[in-house]
Amino acid sequence: MLALSTDSLRGYGLNRIFQIIKDAGFDGVDLAMDPRNFDTMNATYIAALSEQVGIPVLSVSAPIHSNARNIKMAVDIAKKTGARIVVVQPPKFFDYKFISWMKNEIPKMRQKENLSIALENAPSKSFFGIIPEHAMGNILDLKKFKHACIDTARLGKRKEDVIRVYNTLKKYLVHVHLSNLRAGTPYAPPEKGVIPLESFLTKLKQDQFPGVISLKVNGKFLHAGDDEKLMKSLAEQKLFYDTYFTNVKIMKSAENADPEEGASASETTPAANDQNQAQ
Image 1: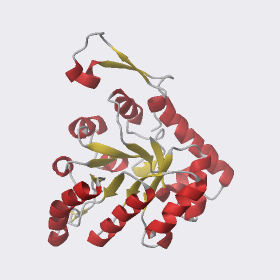
Image 2: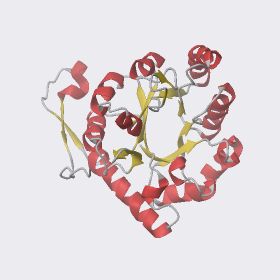
Image 3: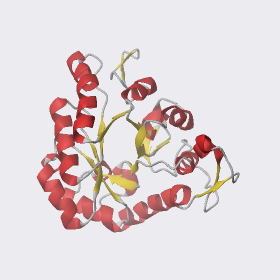
Image 4: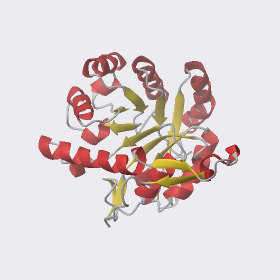
């Protein structure tokens, strides 16, 4: 399912953001919690807004600088809105107490609340170019966490291969934040950049990815603030998704293919020719 991160439209009121997402034809909302915007932290208001506008909240993304309280709030929002996925950020490298809490308590919360609480790959920031700013932020850490979210722009900044990372994590992947890297700038539109998102989306469809794909693009690339240009840009992003995911047809390569091979025994046919990637 295709969601739009509310972070992409930062600057609009939350009620306006929900309406824009619905009008643009997305399947639902990826609610990005922001402590500076109280509406994004209010579970009761968000649930009422979702019902009023008529668009579901598909996932909840905890704030970039989270703590145990924020994550519990994210879970509460998910429970009240019906979202099945909560995305959490890697803790700070030296926050040993919070690291321990995440490792010990989140698995219990998953089981108790029957939710997927997924860890996202970390930004590429470091101290003195040596010590990573975040713990639990590499691909092995995501695998150990069991539920994973990929931010493709962050992979691009680290020069990690998105297909290789996906193949490592696909058993655990429940959520994707989709955007590109253009001239070193992250969160560019999917069709404009160096990351091969056409191939990535097609691979997700081939493997029948059951989770949420959330478009997370910097609002300046979407022309936020100019309604006409914004809706046109969102239509372009949705067309990209539909071309390389929704409209991709999966055909079994052999009638009696080994069922254990799953997606590896499939062929994928895009509904349209691959677009040239913009550099």
